[in-house]
Each structure stands twice: as structure tokens, then as C-alpha cells.
Image (cartoon, rainbow, N blue to C red; front, side):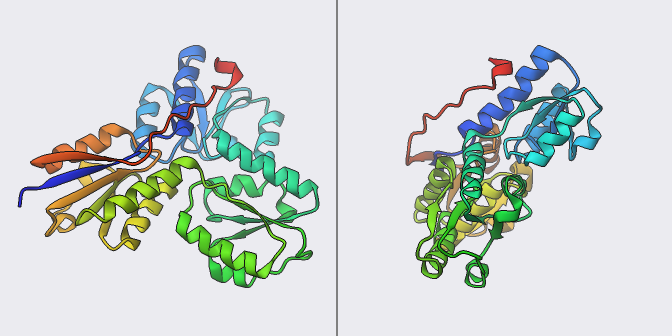
Length: 303
């Protein structure tokens, strides 16, 4: 049977990623080099390398930015402690935090000030979760799994609010929420998984029912890409996370006549097309699910 590729849609860049990349490129155009970026602006090495070649300097911590220089905060957001350090060092900050991540930070502040314990469902070592939990650290508990939710102890179980990382598995998060609702009947739930994460997981799930193998195009350190692979596997097909055509192996494609392709919110479309070209299928079709038309304003410094 000739090889057929089906492209899931929506896929690729979300509005927050487009905004973050635009911010770095516009800052370089307007202010010239150097422009420092704290953390990878988005989790994709190809995107980061392309921006590095244009003159962006990526650092893990602010201590690596010389005093008084211009620094961009990544799309994942930062804690107040990082903002304070930047202020004390007289760094010129441009904030590329995704507005949907900023919303979660504001929720944390609101509920923390109202005397709630914040249960933050997320991956505790992920930069987004670290940033959000830094808003009110004394009142925030991070939970990753249903088992952790079962063992949770809250000082005042009548004042508990649940917030989430924006790039989690929709299905896995629902399991954690179910446990917490049972244990804390007065729990307030603010599910913050973003539209792009939800849409791409739905696309992966739909695609998985129609193909032999799903290829998720994206970076190994991307939370939303890893969740796409897990969603496809949970739907019953083999699924692999590859960042580009160079990662493809014969074993991944073994016995597959129908290959589905999706990509994470930080994956450029040219990587998807490069994988399709490497596969060289007889037929390529698209499986559109939802049309996305979200746009975010640039920071005032760059408008």
C-alpha cells in the first residue's frame, strides 16, 4: 500500500509563541545587539538557534546578563523574585510572557491575597510552574499526579483553589481534578490549560484513530509536545516525538502505511514540511479540527 500522510490541524505556533518570537526579532531591529533572553524564548532548539543567529543571547539566569542591559523574559513567565532582581540590576526588561500564563499569575495573586491555599497542578521542574508558584510561594502547593492529590493536606480545606500549568494533558489533569474535588468539596477550579494545548491534543486524538503511527514534531523539552505524544499513545497507536527529519528512523515507521503528523505550539511549520518531504508520501491530506484566530498585543515598548 502506498504511503499516506495525514496532517493534523491545528498544529504549530500558537499566538503566545508568535508574539514571543516577534518580540525578540523586533527588539533586535529596534534596539540592536545585544539583546539578552532569559531562558529559551520557547521550547524549540531550531527557533532558538535561528534567533541566536540574528543576535539574541540566551542565558539561564539573570546573573549572566551585564548590569543595565536589555533582557527579554521568555513566554513561560517568571516569578516576582526574578523581576525584583532585574529591577535591582537596572536591566531594561521586555516581557514576552504569554498573556494566558500572565492570567494564571494574576489568579495566584488574587486567591493568595484572599487567604486561599493554591493547588497548582503542573510539572514542578517546568519553568512555567516555577514562575507561577513564585507569586505566593508560602500558599502554593504543586501537585503532579492523582497519587499526590490523594496525599495532600490543606490547612483550611474550605478555602482551596486549583490552578494549572497551561500545557498539561487535558485527560491527566481531569484525573487529578477529580481526586481533589472529592477530597475538597468546596474546591474552586480554575482550569488554565490553554486553547492551543487543548486543540492540539484533540487533533492528536482524532488523528490517532485514523493512522498506524503518529509523529509529533517538536522538541524533547517541550511540555506540550510530550503531552501530544502521550495523548496519541493513549489512543492506541505508536507515537514518536521527533524534532525534524534527521530524527526519523526506520523502526518508527515499521509496518506503517498511514502516518499522522501533529506538531506542538512551539514547532515551526517548516520542520513539519521537512518531515513530510523526508517521508516522500504518495498522498498528503489534512485533517482540520478547529480554526484558530487568536492574536495578542505586543508589549508597549515595541508597538
